Image (cartoon, rainbow, N blue to C red; front, side, top):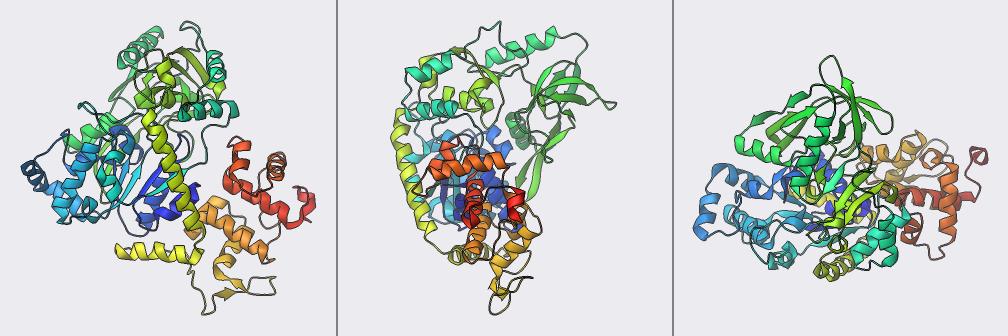
Length: 572
């Protein structure tokens, strides 16, 4: 399932389980959904199973949101006591949509405790007191954090079944673009690691004395991380500069933010220190995981970081916030950096790295090796300092469950693919209205009574929804900007172009600026020609995930119009 298809399903108001491999864009889709809800005047309750995951979506842990804290069992008296607390009663009572990130790290017992609190406060015996529930996670990654023996995954609870979840399994890959590496990761995920895969990994072995000193190092244990970061900083000449974290809000909420923030509360840096950005830049200058070296400090004392691509960035202080019903309840401010010499596999979850030294010699959890390796984009960026057999294993119970998730997702995808777009849009509008929101459109989709409009140069009328898209394309807007302006997914915009082509209202000149360069387009065309069935998934995987489904569809559309080579000269 594509990101666009999943987003369209989320907008219907169904209870959804959003899953997919690392790098498939689960958090991106959720952030898009949250943005759409807020634009419609609806404030979701955003939570996560861990503090680190919560910072990625500007939310709080489910434990804090529901008031259960560290408890793993509660009596009826305990539930009543928690439900009587004003802050908990207010946020749970006012909620309409509950999003839970990293549900794979949530035990069935904690999952059920949060449900009991919601039912009690909302006086509603439906699952989670009638809230729309969105669960996000990948059960192949790290398992639930629990003190209890024999902890079960959340999906093992009868509550999971009672939610009647629609499964959306994302199949696009946006992190890795290396076919051999993808094959290794797929083999680990499917439990089919063979000697060829092991040999490819062994070829990436380096001794601890020989690995690149400025690369981040991932370890399974905290003690290794703390030791190496301190040792490497001490080796550098000069006096360290200290950066203290600022905090606002209630202490318990602030402490939760601090635990989830990858930048430390007290950060020491020196010129020459290897660092990693810990947050995404709103301007796109860096992402969570971008590597660099401190080259100095500006006149205000802020670090000047040279990234591996040669860019020089002033690491200005950034804010991590905890929002509740659209109100910021707590915030911390810190330079968005951490020393990049070492970190735990657990804290690397959610990151994308160009390269890393990984020591899996003491891996002890199912999925630990898979999480660590899948942080890196290419096999050439992997430097293995150690590897045990446990690191190549995923939970065998999850293997069967994953097949069920994939089958369920495919059934959901086919059902929605058969629904006409106007019908899907009605579901979106009905969901927004049911929650008291407003349908926001930059321009009316209804238009005149006939729903048609004439564009300059067109001899016949076309539906308004297509006319708006066509005009935006002719104005030179990008795919993402059109989707944003029209409150559509990128996939729907491409679908509009395909419909326009069928009506004979689209020339390749109209959308040439949306196509990749000629060399890339030729690669896609060749891959398309090799597939007689017309399915896009084989093409996507044949191209090692380098191009999105939308890009592949645009190239297919370009060649279907007149079959000419993709060059400006052919457009005249």
